[in-house]
Image 1 (tube, rainbow, N blue to C red):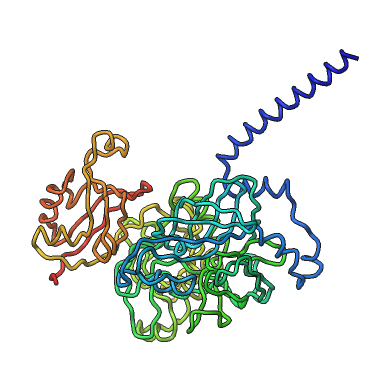
Image 2 (image 1 turned 45 degrees about the horizontal axis):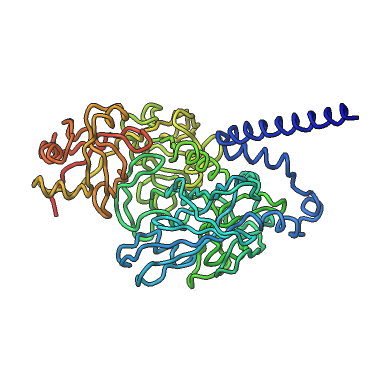
Length: 517
């Protein structure tokens, strides 16, 4: 009997050790898994219920029960700042989604987020968390956490944040390409701080480009297609740096819903609620969500690299309508008119030219900017995209290999001849690289950008903090004195700035000297 008991005890201890070793290995393996892999593991162990959704598509109880536990309330705290310094995203979305208080002491705002992995990754909108000093998370079961920002992508208005937790409920990522106009959807979030609110509606439209993510003035902008000049025209549509292909819904979305979930009747996440069209700031029947297939690429890049690895086409274009066709003296009013092709870009190497009209992307007809923006935004450098272009009366197919660098389009910066004024117009502060940092970044010369001031050249052209400037006007720079000397050495009136973005992408920006202000 003792022998039998010893055998049982030995078996029990061996099993416990094996289970413990498995859990250690599993946790280490999970750290290197992508969000989608974590989703697969989670839903293999926790399959969604099939009751109600497929047989009764207007019964939302199952979908609501699946999703609500994984939608969180987000409260952010900001340092006091003057309203005149608010950027367009703050003005557009601050009042819409939680609002920012008057600048008397710390400011606060609120929104929503969606848990997408059991170990605490949460997707929300960039405008919910940008510039926040503190991000507080309250889960549906009233647990409280402080979140850290893993990365943001202002071009899609997405952000990935994380809390320190395990075994959290998550929402299953769906397929927004399969979404159909007219199908039922649910919006889940925290409007007016009413936590865990579920509203229902239908998909009203897809591929909406609203011009919400972008600038309100003429400027040079960075987009997935290249750096291009944006010129506002009276009543006309304009390019901007935002990547917009919104799912439109009439499910009620109100202040505080921003960053929340848009799900189908199976409880699958098909979009991240981002904006409303309203004259009052409250629901008037028009809500917009970022499609989840676009978000998947952005979130996986942020998790893996800390920033988005985008492939660039390298063109500037106009969206055609009858007014644009009349202005351009062409007889086609549908498609994208190629204004300019950046030298050295994938588009240039594929043979695209000024005046070409992009009519199809991967075989799908192009009616508006979003029909090109979203497919390109899902791709990485080195990926190919197939375009059908109309050149004169001839239609031809071209395959474009996207590049990590957008190439160079002509641009103008209004600068003066004074070295000090030129230096100030850069709108940035710099720190010399140490020998160790030069070795780390594999450069022989360089300064690191430590500050970018709003409204000046580095801000306008999106050279962010953390970028490395290796040369100006083809002269190596190692400190601020080198920069002052280099910017006075114009080549044919051009200011040439060369370096690397924080993600390692090289750039070589050329600015033409203007008449000054």
